[in-house]
Length: 185
Image (cartoon, rainbow, N blue to C red; front, side, top):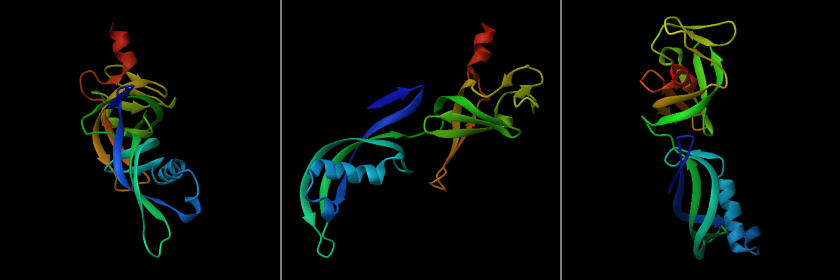
């Protein structure tokens, strides 16, 4: 199942795996103990194969438990649902300008910010103004904080999993600040 929030892709994934329930939690309600473990292991984590995990939605199935000698914990084969944001190459996203800098713009897209280099903001000579905006010389277009923009994902890097990088462009027809197109009408 896919949910579209402001054109950014969010997915509800069904995952199956063995979940460790520590000995201290074995007397509790099993579903609650597994949900607690899942929240600790998955919620607000970034796993490149899955994406940005926003939350554990539900525990669907719990299989028989297995105890590993020397560990004392029980491992349960569990099927569960995760809510994730998974950016895809060439995907068109809608976001809000969070920051404008001399080198470009940071666009808030879902739970992460993408970066648009100044050369990728518009088809024009672009300069940074003292008022903290980017200005196009010929087109007279500008970009400022809180502008809603449409951009395309052109680079995704999980090299540093704690700080993934998303590169964006707005140099294609139909992309850019939404007000640019409203002003044309």
